[in-house]
Image (cartoon, rainbow, N blue to C red; front, side):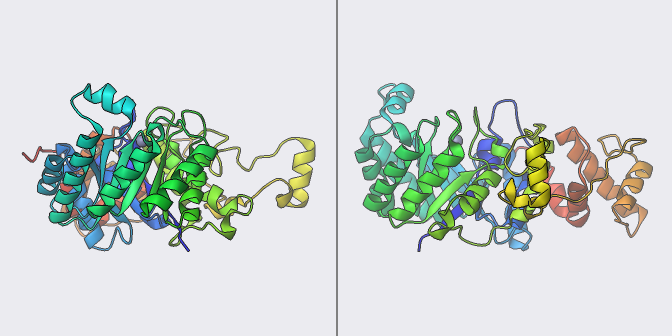
Length: 412
Ligand SMILES: [Zn+2]
């Protein structure tokens, strides 16, 4: 039976969002949390962007060390053979790629202004797939940008050409969030049946339907006999109104009426990591979690009115579909309300030792402590806010990785 896999794009769609971004260390932490949560793949960045190279390479190194395992790390680039070559030159360890090109008439005419026709799109995409294959890509997804405004016949032709050249998945991009659950189900089912390849659902929230569309699309892929790969982002952060929220997608697949009878997540997804990753992403992006956010919002398990409070006290299932413990919530949190010692780019050894002592990290020598402090300062230069415990622990545990990660010198 085909399954639903999670392919998170926080480190690609999330970070390309207007007014938002993550430091390279924060991107790394997102990968670590995704790995712990059992997400299948992280679209971890842009191999053709110079400032990403060291981050991408160090994360591939972490995968080799077993720190980022079994998570699969995939890069995103344009479906252009030249970009594929650049990607492999700049990030030689690249193994997984998604290659993107516009497929709708709107975009072909509106962006390329008559310089490209549909045949050119297919020719460029297949040349890029060939290049990726010959350079050693283990898995290739081919992205049809603006697929929801592309005629089905052309999408099928595009998908078949990709498959013939050795692509592994077709990404159906509802780039503008134009679909609804009924249309995306029909289209993705038809694609699965006619192309015979796993389909990715890449949904946006411009009409408020990103999560609903994602699971309707996944149902379409599975009913068409193919695996589904839902693209998510942590807290739904992504271009404009955002992408399908990771936690909400897991909840929708696993808790909605009758869905799991036939449509199940592949691998083992650990929902109890939801609270931690959502909180970290909120802090790192500087975007508060809305109080009514599914599962992780402040009000997701709050009850006030008489009938609700009475009902939930008698039996939580009266007013809750799932328990807060399932999402890793419920532990008391320590919030400093008095004196605070923080990390920063101008921190000194005394304050730093105090902070590390509180999280029970000790150093073999003063020299070692100074080395780690220097890395913490560099991390703060990039993030411009105090590092969280997990970041400090990461730097203390993998100082050599951190040293490369925090280096932003252009490679060429
Ligand atoms: Zn997108």
